[in-house]
Length: 457
Image (cartoon, rainbow, N blue to C red; front, top):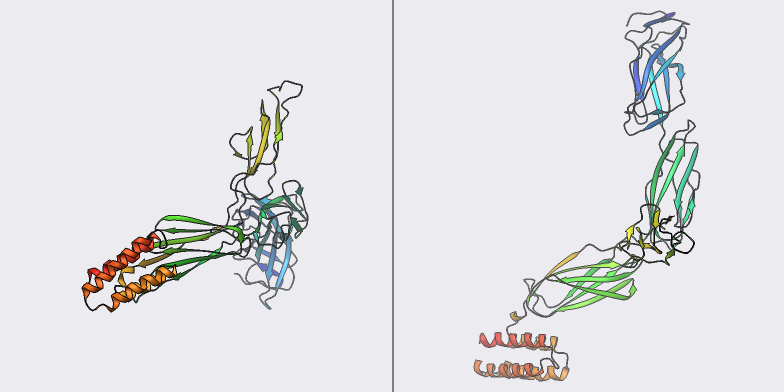
């Protein structure tokens, strides 16, 4: 830079450009052109081109260009002039600008003057999606939040409840949702330049959290983690909002559904594993947040196809159906297959009835959990172990006492052959009660356990 005195200013190199857009990358300015020197009191003008490069800001509502000089002596900055166009600068558009002013006296400027570009984009912001979990009432008050929009002068919201459409105004209105459901709410903001920007927010009110199920396993386990007795598995599901509707479980792939009636906040079901083997058990619960399992057919709407006694097959009517936000709206004509509603339903010809309803909003389904249980009852290969099985499995006390007495004699036998004789007697008594006072499954367990002892004597 050439030396300058108090009355003259030399711009060498030419002024630099500083970009301060919102966001920075969108708003750019080509290198300005202008004089390379000026005397104190001179009026100077720099010319450049501002461009909206369209990063994530589709339209700038306004932008400002300012021309600054920095005093080398005391470090102060002097704003010489501003250029404030007030119009939109859409994506890909450019705008020539001139900025300049009178050079102050008695100052030496180093580094050379800079040009700053600042922009404010016209962007609607309806705020983050909201989830109101398990409201106390079906009607829910919600405060919308459009304050993140970039300085508009008008806000217009739009939403419907299935019957009416509402248009609150202002950045943060409070609305009342008529029932639990999912609502998409639109926001339209208008800027002084006439530019309009839109956004939307989804409000979910209801039960969005799946139940939680725990498993309690009761049985006799050895040091290897193998159960040597019947195993009882109790599944307990909890849902603090709409309650537990179903508990599902599979045993080696075969599914069982326990339906909770009436629906309860806490529900349990128990099943038993009575045979030796390895069991892969999965389980999960479903809450009561869903609606009916098929479209809900509301009273059909009669269609008058063209007046005057004869049906008039060429006449059509348009029917607009409004969703209440609780599911995909479907319609059917004259009892035919339901179809999704994507706009006004046109009904022509000889159609007499229009029915409409909803798909099932998904209930909350718990993630599947898995248990692996190994049962080997025959490892209790002693007479005392067999006595323990009798007391565990045989619920009729008289039969249990009779079988235990036979086994006590077997335990006191002095020779293996004598013990085997008592065990054979035990087996006959068990088989005689099989399907009567002893279930067939329990009879099989006891018989196999006795055979194990006999074969190992």
